[in-house]
Image (tube, rainbow, N blue to C red):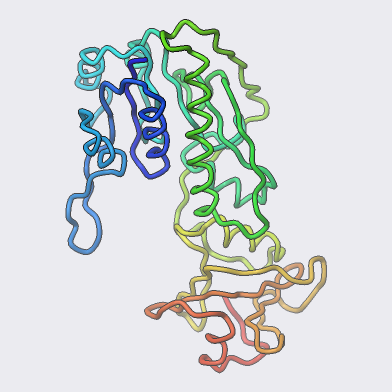
Length: 312
């Protein structure tokens, strides 16, 4: 099939590569404009653009989607189908209407759960035992279109959002390959459509740094999910003597027990263990403001904190 691909970050790269590996014709790639990165603020192309240029595929980076520029570009490319994977832009109705076979999206959750920009992170933040990807026909809503296929996978007990992200981008590429096969080589295949149950929908809004603040009055298991879900960005954090303390890894202990005042450092054989509203949380990898990452027990020895000290 003749396809236009729309995507931006690392998550979308395996999907574009799979389309090419499956022998489809990619007439063009739409991606977001280059952005300044790092301390030098040098303009850096998105990962999808980098792959497209390596493969000799024309790249389009419209700054807006509703001023007619993107529409003219898409009409000139005349795709049978548009595939969208983490593009980061909402497609207006006139663009959705261009390809005769429609627009297909790969989303990083088992819809209708976790509609929005951060489905993988919210899956982990909420301690879900199962994650997955969905292929769907796009409509004017936010992740509200009819479902084509879904692929599920268990979430590891200590798996972070970043680790799950790496697995789901590959699962998404496989789901996309199966989805495109349903259309057939000429687009005449019968593709299933299952409407979403809006009553089961949950949101997955963009994360903020403030959401990473650790409230030790919460159960240890909940804080464990916060640390996993906020990794690698924006990160979970607390304060120690007025300084920011990032928590990169942690493990919950003693579920259901009352271990002391929330936020209090516990005696735990040299481990960096903090009492929570229920149970305790062992901080296994931390980083004090302006310092490097350290295992919790190493940080504790260097800080000379004593049992009873308070965090947060």
